[in-house]
Image (tube, rainbow, N blue to C red; front, top):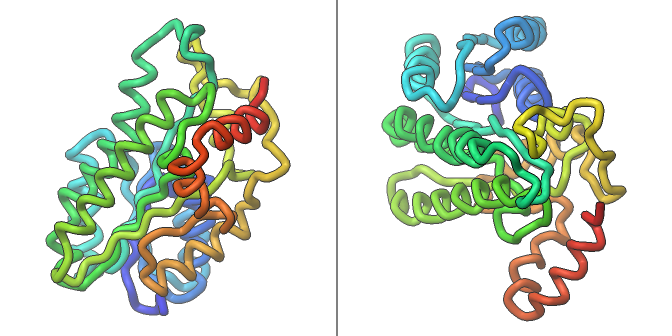
Length: 265
């Protein structure tokens, strides 16, 4: 299904972006990869090339509109088309709101998790219309409900969810579809260690362990790839999370109690 297709992936130097790049490369995709760490990105690109994939890499940051333009332009120049635009770059936080010392955290979260997606779609939409392509936004279940200690992260994912839902309706009839991926916490990405603490610094080794319900990275990659092939609208992982919006609407206090129990400090 991915053979001969061009897949653009942001946040590709580690975690889910790296794992997804390797998976679609093994199926014969061409790849345009972007990440902030040029060294790590280069290693991922070489591993993809060893699978026989064509790869172009762009060291950059999704918060920079010019970097996003370079990425999408490089993909079209190298491969002639863009079939999948996977918007995976993201940052997180873990802090009680009243313990935040640096409110700039909230701007950084919004810039990467929401506006970074807008930047890439802005420069990639024409190519996606030409190919009848798919926008794949890696969101979170926290895009449809609040979670303690993640105020800024939840806000950015809610913004992303609203953008994707609105964009999907606008693009009806153009051949372009929008898939939003909403996992629980993901084990094995390093996102939690890089999350902002209240001081604005990364949590690093002080990061909390994952809840037992956290999703394994390998399992998530397989589910995302299948959802891409089927051009689904939404993917909740684990699947039972699809009931979260319903529970929020019908029994919001019950949902709050369940979430607080899972995230208690």
